[in-house]
Amino acid sequence: MRITLGVTGGVAAYKAAELVRRLQQDGFSVQVVMTRGAREFVTPLTFAALSGQRVITDLFAESGGEANLESAIEHIAVAQRTDLLLVAPATADILAKFARGIADDFLTTLYLASTAPVVVAPAMNVNMWNHAATQENVEMLRARGVKIVDPDEGYLACGMTGAGRLAGQAAILAAVHETLHATRDLAGEKALVTAGPTRENVDPVRYFSNRSSGKMGYAVAEAAAKRGAHVILVSGPTSLEAPAGVERIDVQSAAEMQRAVLERVVDCSIAIFAAAVADYRPSEPAGEKIKRNKESMTIALEATPDILASVTQNKGERFIVGFAAETEHVAENARKKLAAKNADLIVANDVTAEGAGFDHDTNIVTLFARDGRDLALPRMSKSEVAQRILDEVVRLRSKLRTAQRSSV
Image (tube, rainbow, N blue to C red; front, side, top):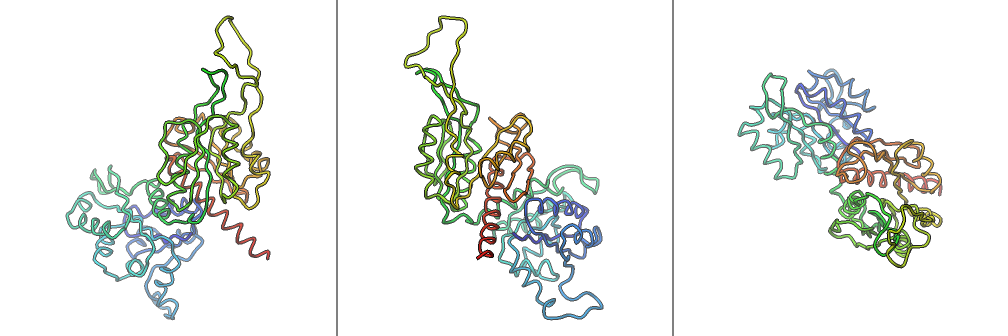
C-alpha cells in the first residue's frame, strides 16, 4: 500500500525520518512531500535516501526548470495513487489551511485533491495547540473524517511544558493501521479462527489445560470481521464474549476442536490457528473421581490430534496461519514449524517476555512468512497485533495471486 507522508515546518520534522523507516518495515511504500518550512529543518535528500523515492517540494517546476504537463498536475497523480495521506508533524499553519481549504503549495493542494483517508499528527507550542483557533480547526477536520493523533504532553523545544509534542511513533502507526483497516479488504472471504485453550479430562473433576485466555485469537476474529470477512471462531473455554458478527463454536478438548475445524474449514479461504491446543491428554481418563489414597501417582499420556497439520494435508489454495508460543530459540522453532506444517505464515513469540504471551492485553510477536520476510513487531495491544497479522495475510495473498497470474 502507498502512503504519502507530508512533513511540515517544525522542530519535530526530524522525527519523520524514523517514521519513514517504521512505515517501510510495516510493508508500506512511502513518498514524502515537504513544505518550504520543513526544508528549513531537514533536507529532501534525507527522505529521498530513506524512502527510495523522489521527494516532492513544490507545486510547480522548481526555479530554473521548465514546467511540463506531468509536473503541472502531479498533485492529481499523487492523490490518485496514494492509499493514505499522513501529515507528521503537522503545524498549526497546515491545520488551518486544511480546515479552511487553502491550497497554496503542493501538500495543501494534494489534500484537497485526494479522496484517500487522512491522518494528521500535530506538533507545536502548547499555547498554539490550546488556542481556540487551532482547536476549532482540529474539530472541523475531525468532523470531516480526518484522524487526529493528539500530541503528547511533556517538555517542548521552546522550553515550555504541556501538550504539543509530536505523538510517539507507536501511536501514529496505530492510527495509520486503524484508518486503513476501516476498509473492508477481506470482504467476500470466509475465515476460520481458533482461539483459547483446550481441556483434556483426567477424571470427571480434573483436567489438563494451559494459561491461554483466548484474547489473541478473539482479537484476530474481531479484526477479520471488521475487515469484511465471514468469520467462524472455534473457541476453547474462555470468559470472553464473541465479537460482533462472528459465528462462535464452543469446544472443550483438542479432539472436539479438530472435529469442529475439519467440518467447517472446507469452504474457508483463510484459516488462522491461534488456539493453545494441548499437546498431550490422558490416555485413559478415569470414569470416576480419582481419590487421594497414595503419595504419588502416574498418569499415562498420549498425543492429541495435530489440528494444523490435519488441515494443511489438504491445503489447496487455502491460506494458513499458525502460532508458535515458545520459551527459547523462537526464530529457529518458528521457521521449522513454518516448513513442517506447510503454513504460509507463523506468528511466534517468547511467552516469557514481559508484556507478551498469556494473560496479557499486549503481545510481542515476530511474523515469519513463506516468502522469507521476518517482521518483528514491538509490544502493542493484541488488537493491533491482529491487524498486523491480517496485513501480512493480505500482502502475501496478493503476492501469490500476482505470481499465479504471471505464470499463466
